[in-house]
Length: 367
Image (cartoon, rainbow, N blue to C red; front, side, top):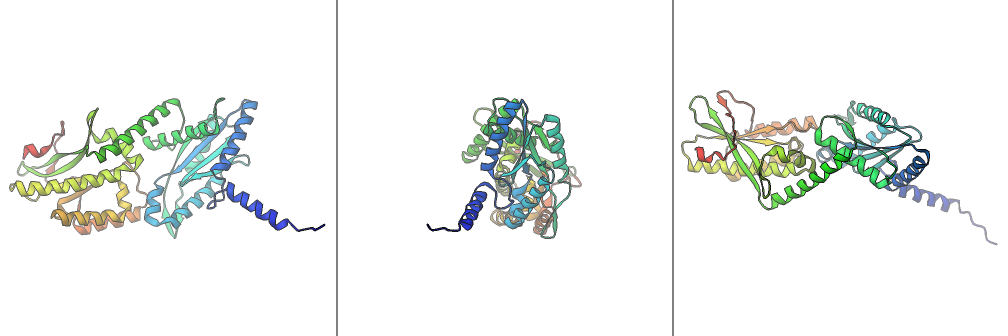
């Protein structure tokens, strides 16, 4: 009989099994292992009459950091976040990396109040900056909370927590929120709006309206603010506030901003050519803060200036405050580059005032 040492083979099998169930970057449970644990937790909760809390945790503005600083810096940020989360978990809790910058925390026998207290501690742990390559990067997390019901499955409970997390991102008021059924309805509406907005850009349904900036000295337009509208086939002309949350959450705001920038500059050039009484008018364009962490935006602006013949000092940028700036140093660097081109800020300029625009009609008829 031939005897063989199988210790090495068993060790290799165990390592392969561990890799199949854990995230290689953070060492946390992966999605597959997460679902297995949640199935067990729900079964025990059903027998005991208790609840399972699921906290769905998303790192805000991670894509901006990843794009601006590179994947190595992004990975380092995720590893540090996982370490901070680990310090806040109980021995019986399960922390998993769900994918990308999303983490899920499973807690057995936990009620709503305790889950919210835990979410508050997680949010507080984000007050300290991430030290990445010797630089401090500040970020927050959005946390969706879901408490199990008797008919919940692992999939449905995770989906509820995910839905609650997106509700946090939509409102920007709190760092965490607990799921309720109304959220699901809003998510469905948001998904419908996002799908329609993507189609709207392909079907050229966006429209520009220009609010004049009147010179107090001459009483004539000295510049314009470009305002985007959506000519919805069923709901009519929609203002930006009607679709801004969806545009930001989906990332479509970046493409919309670029569309506005190009069309506003081309329109300004047309007015200069056809209306000689307009003397070097300016155009102010609203921008999402996402552009401040993207070097390609400066390059794109340079190309448009060259194509249209518009002088850089005729172009004003107004930075919206919907989002926090993920990397302040990089944002300042890019704004300085825009300033070096000659572009200005669209803040109130001495001697100019913007009148109310009650109807937001196309101001070309006023020239």
